Length: 241
Image (cartoon, rainbow, N blue to C red; front, side, top):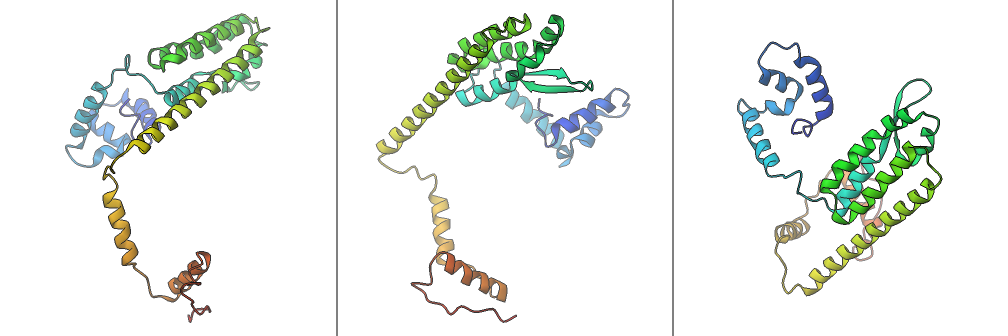
């Protein structure tokens, strides 16, 4: 998991697995070869490994609960199946493309939908609690598709999509209300942006202006767009190159 999170992690990990079986050298050398970010120093690999262990150890994959937004993203990713096209190439489809499974026999449909079923099972451990009934309903829809009992599947899909949209809207409304409540009840500023505001004022009071002809011309054009010429009239003209 930690290696996959590296820049270009998927490509590097794929190349690493291709070479590791027959590799006879030192493993850290092979890791640095496929994950260049670990080459910062002689001790960077050890420091990175200790940090990753600490980060992963702080996560409880069974009890840490996703937010509604995280649950939605994970659910969208889980609701995908794989099917071979006419040329034999495996393609990934969203579950809404379930009618393409009707032409398959039952074992093939079950095999195609197995990743969806497994993904929903994994998500059920960490999803936002109110999503668990939805996952159960999605599992039921998958069973109906696998058995080719599709009479009620379109309506079930429509109801599930409507329920998800309603849950997202309610979550957004609740978040906005909490933000409004916190802002309107605040009695003093937190000071978190004081440094930024101070720097902004310093830059505005002491602007750095380049003196070349192109910069002067761009400054004149900028003044036009921001209507600064009304208070600071300038004589417009082409720069002297």
